Length: 412
Image (cartoon, rainbow, N blue to C red; front, side, top):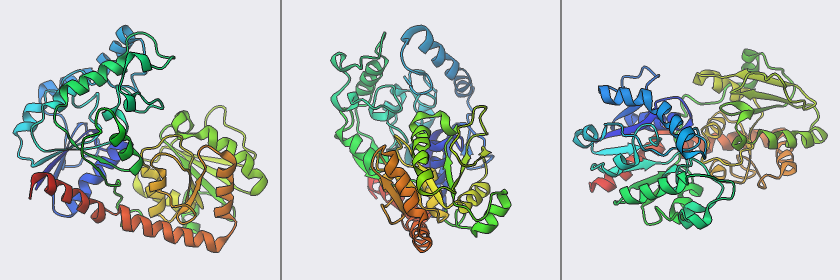
């Protein structure tokens, strides 16, 4: 069985890391998997970067062209959060003629394949979704429901002005995608969105979680981990991490800030560790110390950091799944999160952590205190967290489910 995974990058960003892990999980069980990307940074021989002059040229100029398109024509949306996926990549011929039995798309929108090119693929296709773009307009994430109702002039949000980029993009998807594609989502919530969407409601959907290498991601002794990182002993340590730290509103740092104000009354001696961000110029005042680690790029450093913490915090407003949540569980660190989107697939309430009521910051603080207040309970939560990671997210478990799906659509 030969499979090609397509993603904009191999290891830069959450979608890339998830796709790269799926690719290597399959290789571990004997599937001949390769990965095609625009941006290759891993120096991995199983990853193929751009080779044709056209593809290389388009990969270089496409971001600038799309940004200029937004500024000069559309006058709506954010080029970082929206993808019209208009410009061609020149890859379709090579993909249709390659020896792969299955093409597994990942984050290809706007950078790697155009909407028209996705519709011209003739191999069996699996599309693993890492955001909402596939069934929306040009948005990667949205809180409105045009994707459910269909993009009409009457249901356009009042805050949008000018050319209706999202409706135009959605209509192009409907025109070019004539054949259903086999969709994979890493969470039950995203699968339900696909099934309810006006664009993909009749398409086949399978829920398969993102994998994690539980042999690499495993607990370290907490005292040793704190010593290695220069973190204090004898105090509860809370861990929060996101690309860009507190800059992305979807990651909910403002909600965490409010929750920690309540936590001061419940557990006054805690300290917070933030990774993915250096200490900002105007650091928030929480009434207790905050340690900023900056960006940690290697798995070992992150494994040590998870092991040093007592609780990992996921205050996200919107999260399809969570690579960091899985990493924490694999390292035996309980997770506190809001009961939204894909996070209930990561956190089992009062078994691997605590699921707070959606955006209820007092309940979030109560959840942190509940995990910290009883040491035997915390140890049991840690054991449960590790067990869930091994049983549901380990490479062999997830890879076997992908292989079975490939065989099903191949008819073997």
